[in-house]
Length: 223
Figure: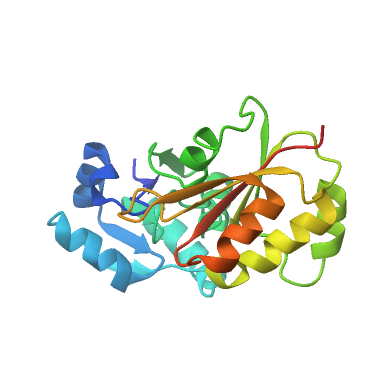
């Protein structure tokens, strides 16, 4: 029986892809990619010639039913995102849910995802944590931060470079400038960096230093 494969891709360093992921991407009938231009470079590097279709947040609502039907008709399909594990702050949930509702088998491969190394090397408690991903940009942001100010578990956020200082400033306002924090950027890449300290110390660091790359912010819970 055909199935949907959820295949993690490297978050930076191409050596982080698994041998199994390469095999699956070569064997399936179709690869659904968030951005075919980005994924095309990855496939070319590993000499994968499988055909790709674009599958992203702007078209996934329209294409889900057709994809499910193709799998039911016998096609094995793999879903990948630009980097990391599909459905973790990336497209994938809607298709996964539709497959389950239609009794289509799903196989999720283990692999790279940015928040795990950021959490582990933060030095903050990792026995219990909550993954928040991207905070709401406008509506609901204040409400969410007010709620999280009472969270006792370690919290993990994703943030883009141009919004980093704004988000850190909000953390200072809602969590306190002395709250322990760790900020990682460019994970697995040449200029990988992790800055640890209080919220205030990290704000001071990134006020004068580069904010290039994608960021994972790990915040200690309320004591």
